[in-house]
Length: 99
Image (tube, rainbow, N blue to C red; front, side, top):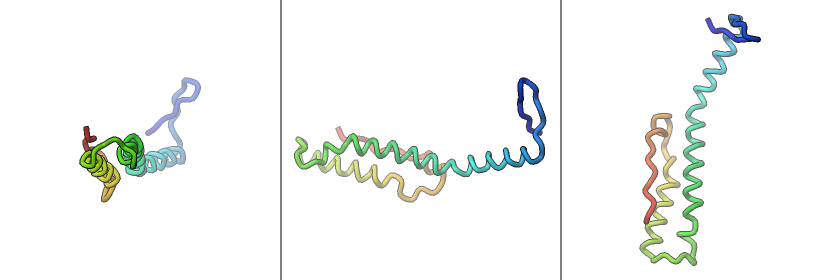
């Protein structure tokens, strides 16, 4: 049986409190995929933002270097395509940034 601590005294949860606690835990666990996807997108978006300079018309890069950066950015944008499970999100490997 689950308990709660109030003013240093441990009390057993009522059946209603325990049901509410279990519902909260289930809701948290069910949201793991969304939380992980949001985190993945945040990192991806940060990397895209950091590489904007490379594909601007006035970028100092050669055409072949620009192509490498464009490919990198496409790979970043496609990173979340087809992900449907927590394990798939955990297994994502970010593409290597061109040098």
